Image (cartoon, rainbow, N blue to C red; front, side, top):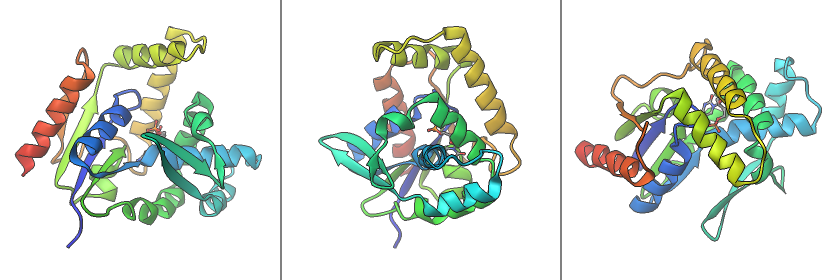
Length: 222
Ligand code: C5P
């Protein structure tokens, strides 16, 4: 008997990470941040001076990169090859590298089993781009979170300026649109809702409201 899974997919800035963590907490289930795996390979590639235009080297890097998740008093920390890379993982550089790496089919294949290994009792909440379509097609409930590009850029702007990072809103919007286009148009596992996913548009909604809607989708799925 395999453990149940809830998948939460969507574009960057849709709030997947925050919402998925809260839903996992509310259910007492495990949580998988699949984007962190792609970001970790991106960071490791940077450390190793690997050319993002060299797919063979990136595939080797994927196999060589050890990623560990640690719960540090409620805060999720990510170790890449034994080094805490939690902060570096969230940078735009890591995100852009992850997005380039994620377009390589052998990299996606190499990460498949690693992602499925997170499926453990009592259950798993998995967030990413292809959780419902490719990694856990048999998930009990599938949610696709969206928000307008402007809203997503605004959230990212707030997140960064709260951290004291100086950013430019129109630059962020451009980056988000470029990443959306790359993720939606790639040949392998393009970002799209699973046929049986419920789309939740979070534009203008607060975190609690979104968590409530996702839990309602889960409850409906039984
Ligand atoms: O979700 P996050 O922004 O951390 O993901 C970083 C990048 O990793 C995405 O832009 C996407 O290209 C890639 N990714 C993916 N499939 C996933 C999760 C992330 O292709 N399941």
